[in-house]
Image (cartoon, rainbow, N blue to C red; front, side, top):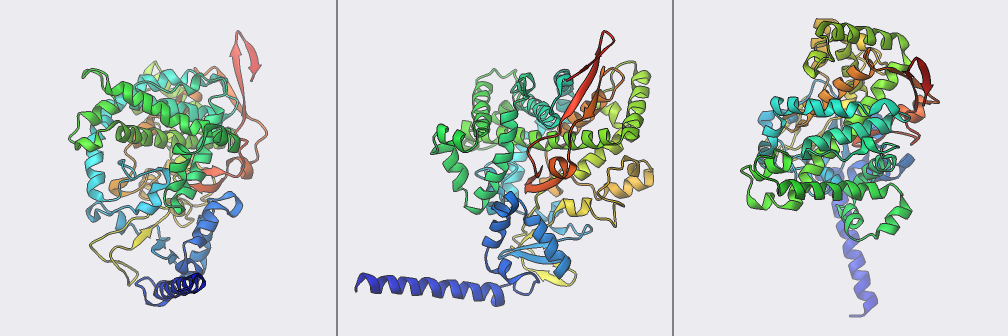
Length: 498
């Protein structure tokens, strides 16, 4: 057989296979009955275009919402996944479902060998149980003095987003390793590393669509000089992992009396192959990264909205001042949680700046039903929490920052049913209480009578610099200019501006 004949036969075989697959996906497959654009049902390249390229990437959520506007509350968004936009539907996230996570979606930050990205429910349960004691209320309370110590470094703020991410990074790594990375000590709050988180988010999305080879190549094959040439912040991506590796190794060598996340894993009932240094480092890194970007972003957006509404800033200051006078000292995390207006501020910040990415799950054993439509078992099903957080039927004027909406007890109870900034079900974020502690303490200190300084926004364009634009699982704005502010604080009666 000639080479040209063999090539022609191979091409014909490929075309036949692609045609058969297309016919199956569009007309014969179990999801063919669900509405949605044919091109999305035909190929995942449609999603990849919006995720990796369109307007800088991370824009498929816009197209998904357009699909819902056209086709209704349930749509097929790729060959194997359905998306539901209904704030009252959460069947797949119920604990009893023991739903799995799809490997292709959650590998955006690497292999599924940590509690966050574990594919099957059993692996997640085992890994989460291993670290649960480290996230107990008592353990978190012991971490409060460290967070308060870190807060003393925030008076030199120039870029709020950098400062809050530095605070969140040092808080998360201090909690995990008992030794913070020291980003608050950096003159620019480790600006290059913070920029790297944005690049890491985009790389993660690309990595998701290219079956995991991107981050593997970036970490193992690409020379450092080339990575720096492509993006100067890339050193921060590698630095985050290598620093975590070094701290994990150091923690593993400590005595039994030392308590940190690494020691917690080593003393757990996990099998030996899940106690290797590489596994522990990835688990610790996942915890630290989760506590860095989300907490820093929520603080940035919340403080922006407060400073944009002086009357709300004044009301918050007055409430915190009363608390200081009541307790005779800076209120603790639990005492700050009792302040109703501060609670409304925190809830609004979490609502407006929660997880951007959708949360796909699958039930491998049972069919599900939505509005009379049977969803076959093993089907990937997702919802997006921002759809609920911005639903006008639940939150009136949903795009407005309105802490007052949470003050009425009955209304707060109703709204709280729909507020889920840390995920849903058994797979919700294990570090929720740590994040809340950092947010409450930070806001409680920044707007306290003892702060000694005031913040003033400087040259901010909300649509460009603050508003959610890119879905790299965490929300990112269109620009990279950040949220900039003057810090005016008194020293010896003199107002100084930074």
